[in-house]
Image (tube, rainbow, N blue to C red):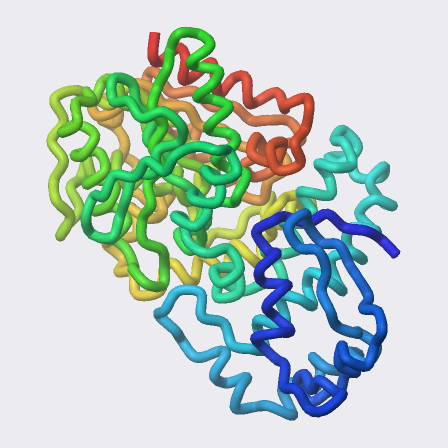
Length: 445
């Protein structure tokens, strides 16, 4: 049996799925979606499958699961209809969807990871990475491909949940600034406002950051401190779709910048950064500074922001390019997931709002005066990521319109590649991470 070490973020989902979601006790049997399973009481010893550090075991017998999921549509059409009804609440999957989380982790994931190991030497992008890193990438790809938004939100919790779990693990205090409008600044490590990095997390505007993302930013913070360039790093907790559509998130970023300035930070000492949708949110702010969005408070700056760093920016939520097809299986997020997430985010967004959400759709002259609101811009992408082509085209445009803009394309890199070295705790970090650190260090010189 293949032993799988999966991420801590899905432990609760696996524990609860059979207990909470699809289980009805009937004597010595457990009925799950119309299929009878022997109950734990019928076994002297339960089968144990280690999935992560915090999850010791799950107590169920998979002996008669075959055919269960295939029978859902015919046996429970009403439940299936409820699962597909538009729901504006956060992380509210049906009991069938909760059971599906367990199925993805326990039955499908081990097979996928086993096959990935067997075929690793034959994949161009994988053969230059260690086995742990390859398995980490594939785990992320598999789960985002198989689970819908409701399932992922339920399993991951919200941004504050991720932050509180991380600070507890690190032995750090919770340092939280309330901003209003259901948004907060969550400080990573030391809070200071003389030099600040404002971090806008990714997750397609739908999900919180992965549990290992704060590790990357703590590393950047520690490296800056070692060079006598100590800085505060604040992660914005903004509202997620579907509970709050655009332009809620833009309003909350404006609040965050206003709060930092009120606390003593100068615009020329603020670096703003984001990954994926967080990079898109960074571009929303820059767009708002250039072209104030209706119904969003204006933000007046006494000087341009020091810099903006965009990691794998999600600049097109709808387009399908060559790299989305060619890199579908090499990236950590595939075309099916990207198009599905894009539809969820754009639901109800008007045509005149699209340039704020999709920077690649903005008019050609949209960013011509970008240097008046931010002094330096860095854009990075991975050569093996599905979004590569749209990022390359957008980066070329920005580099033409901003005299201090740079673009780095990481060879064999996937979407948000630097983070995944921290997911699998790689001893040697990728080539992009030192360059990101140098960017922040130079800006604070």
